Length: 272
Ligand SMILES: Nc1nc2c(ncn2[C@@H]2O[C@H](COP(=O)(O)OP(=O)(O)OP(=O)(O)O)[C@@H](O)[C@H]2O)c(=O)[nH]1
Ligand SMILES: [Mg+2]
Image 1 (spheres, rainbow, N blue to C red):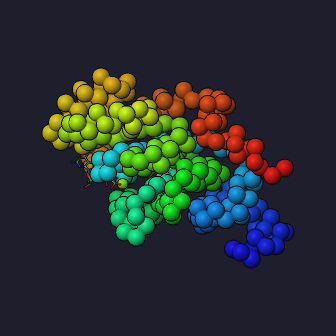
Image 2: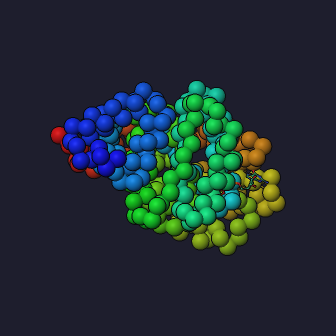
Image 3: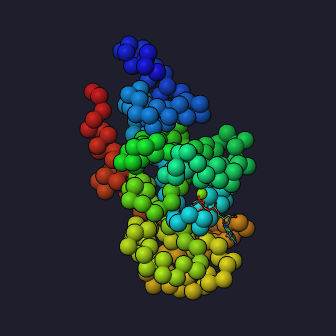
């Protein structure tokens, strides 16, 4: 890598070549470029300049919620549903847990494992690697790589507990907050953070006691509240429908969307 950064022609050639491989949908190139971006290698940024930001437009959906609410199980079901709709699906599990334990990473991988043989599904964990503030930026760049490789649906999982993770949700079009029944007072706390940024609220574990009460409570607060039982695939079609409804409202060229996704900033810094 350092070899490439010292030789300018090699550098340019390498970045252009990698961008081409990404656009050809080569999974290894996609993985490599995202790693370069995570490591803030300049070749990663150079690849982005070769990927036209308006070329492919994906549905970018954020799935956030407290630990253990069923986000990964829900994503596993969404992958199935979007694959049935013929979409190529990318998943970024944004992991802010300790890089030493990596517990959440392993858990996420296991729950979505059945898709690993499907070449139209790309699942990746993204870690903070110590640079707290850069996670949203790295996620936004990874989205551009996946869009370049023609992934039509991109799902981003975060545990929406810290500011860093809430920031990640600013790079998506549709924010889905996943809640499990029986939170009690926690709902009050969530209203100041998680629920404030949610476009859609999912009450997952709808098979659990207290689901009705949680649904009632949240419906007073949020416009779109969906009940799911992710382990059984219940409510997934309804969720897909409200996500599609929400995505329809986004204006592809709206300044707000450009701001949210940082496209205007990226365009401003592109090499001429
Ligand atoms: N009863 C019930 N259990 C569920 C449901 N959905 C998920 N679970 C279980 O809840 C546990 C946590 O599910 P995950 O999908 O890993 O939750 P998560 O939100 O991704 O967890 P973290 O990534 O660790 O924050 C697992 O044991 C699931 O099987 C559901 O609808 N009903
Ligand atoms: Mg998970």
